[in-house]
Image (cartoon, rainbow, N blue to C red; front, side):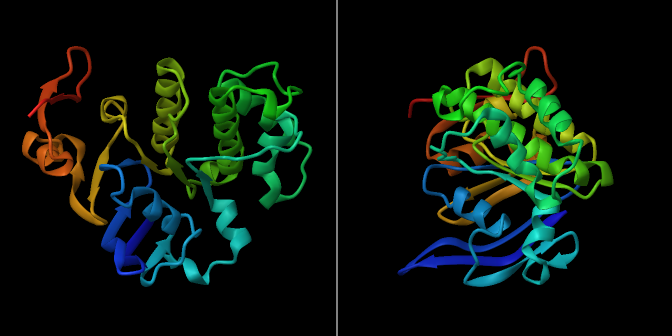
Length: 258
């Protein structure tokens, strides 16, 4: 579980995040949506302890995050940032194994690495050089890294996974797989939070939606209750139609010209 109370992040005279109350529960896939510049990535950095808020508090597993040792945070919380700039000549397996650093070395590390690479469809690429991979392949390697980091906490039901644009640089098939994996981890008892731009891609998996606009929560709640035409029009300043999916029990969003 991770939650915030009255979070505010200020830069100059502008509130990038303004008085945000948030709660993500174990077993739920919580998706954060909103237009560009809404404060989504900044807020996720607050959740991940990369940014200290100017006001408010973050609670991790019923304990104020400021009271957690950083190593203990890393053992319970894994983060996939929007950009993972890594230009060193590391092999793929070494990048994925970075997720195990908070736990020290173990004889099981390489089997966990191999399993994570299998999960993201990169079997046989352990010895490939990371900088030589395509953007999409690098993204999948980073997803594997957070999967091995969260393994122990997932087994204990106390893991938190934070994803900033997990589908960036991925083709539709692998983007779908990435969100499906995140959803499956939530079903296993993890708390999973993702910032997502492609709403329709996230709809089959999202349990809870938080919509940010101008740094504030515009609406939040269960997916099927809050994804309405009026809410989407207010969020994106564009006409939208909420339609039933032909095959799945989730809404589809059609954005229309004004």
